[in-house]
Image (tube, rainbow, N blue to C red):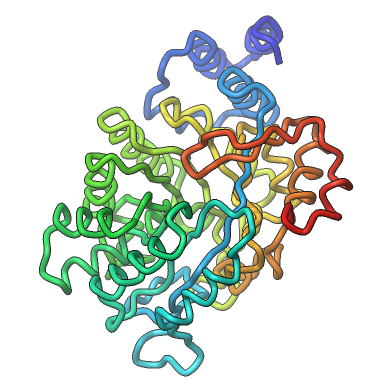
Length: 390
């Protein structure tokens, strides 16, 4: 949508509060906390979508990013008991759990030798026997085998536990991990920062201040990271904006975040199964408000295994410019929680086709958003015969 078209839409808005917010957005002025809440409470889906899409196209045009990646989940055994989690098994009751050795994880790494993946994403449960020294050895072994593979690994929940168990400071622990080969941090473990909600859904793991400090420390070491928000459970709109505001403030300070990823709460097989999941309309509102509020975050990502392919495709009209990567059926976290995608894998051809179908420009990226290849004029059917491209 052009600037003139969005101006006409805002002028036609009958709600003076929304009109005022819209005018601030197109003037590229930051909206306030209260205005963020007002967007959720008063904004129609069409109004929010138009504003978010305008920002998206101002920043990125039609470019939509993806990468070729795979996941390693070292364990689903965990010392914590988050109410929303369908994935982990408590350490005291781990018959249904798995615990991978370094050799087993390296077997997964080596299975991608000769394939053009650029990133391995490593997250899992918090296992008391998988210590900082264990993961330092893993990082060094991966880098020795494949130095070019970007390692994006460990949430602050995992890192906080490792550091406390090893009796090292956050600064010392992050430096050790970085020097061993850790390249960047994923965004998980953030859930909802507000203490009122966090105390009810994940009281026993690292708090908001601890989560933010670990990312702040990573940024000061020259590393980049992502950030998430778990929405659609017992939080209010104000709790969502509070969460985004804390992230926006840290980004003002460090400029180290790459992307913001709203994550939809799924209610299968967990202690919050009685809570209905958010509607697709509410999902799109969440993405749109995220793009509007998170003005200093370069990218907004929709994690397609959690939303499903078609819904992820729809987000590209609501502020999203990244739909993650190929993943290659290497994550169980959302499948176990009842996501739309029970076999989360897409080939490069399928991702390119998905993006092209909504007239966006597919761009393969590295983890840090370096552009690797523009697939805009590539026929996806030509990729399906090329084994290395899938």
